[in-house]
Length: 260
Length: 129
Image (cartoon, rainbow over all chains, first blue to last red; front, side, top):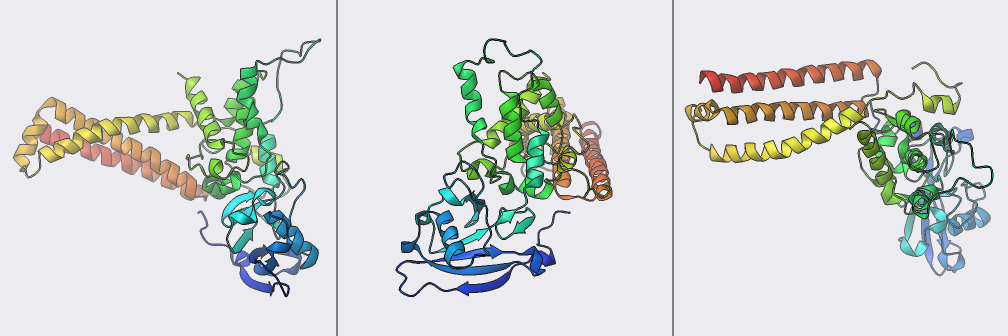
């Protein structure tokens, strides 16, 4: 059955509090999920008080500040700090988003930060995305064509054809959408999730691709595709303003279309 | 499923592959939903019109072919749509294979039994009175 309560070894305890430095002008409280598999202890929620006046404007700046000057063991992924690598996706105040593009100004005095929901946790804010990436790989996210490429040019597309794949191709695989989806929470072992399905859609509608039928065949499955119940959390949280829910609906429409 | 820890992540993601099924279920759920909008409106209006009527009046109403046929169609659509929806709920939340399979079979059989019982009741009123 679906589990509605965390297993005993995942229940969160109260952790330590690091108070704001003396003379802090604008104190913000960060309640951050901490988990260290090596310690053998349950996860805990640490509180870090930070002077926002002495810190960059984004949540990621605050995390880096904490790691630099309060607790160097705080673990999280980050790279580009401009919303294009997708590394710093985490659950901030109950919403999956990128720490680097989430402004502290848009959040309250107290900010709760957890790893992406319902994923195995490697350490602190780092979720294990192995399965998520494997699901992405399973939709064969590359061009498949039988016609050889023209010897003297690229495989051409019209401007309209390019525009159709332009948005879906902008996915950064941050996993905000899939880990916000209740269907993915309950059935991620068999449901591909919005990110992988958006990638599949991107190749299905690519005018240069010739494996459209095989791609649709591979998705026509009660679990791989049809676990999507149009909850639309995916579209709601996407930090790149993409629309995986619509992509999935389009795939479902194409599957009907090729039957009738 | 047997222990899969040593299987590659891609192997696990591919799993048993595609069932090549699901589009029929999805489409049937939508078509039956549209049918239920129309039949449901008709049924609600009929119930309002029959408010306070005794058994004889309802039987007389069902003696006419059109109400009897629509009532039977309504029952078929209701239990068909319910069975499709409950199937999704069970597949979503029941993860143990044997429990899932037995719940699905039981749910299907109960839906069919209820639909048949409803149709029988309509026919009895329509023909017997």
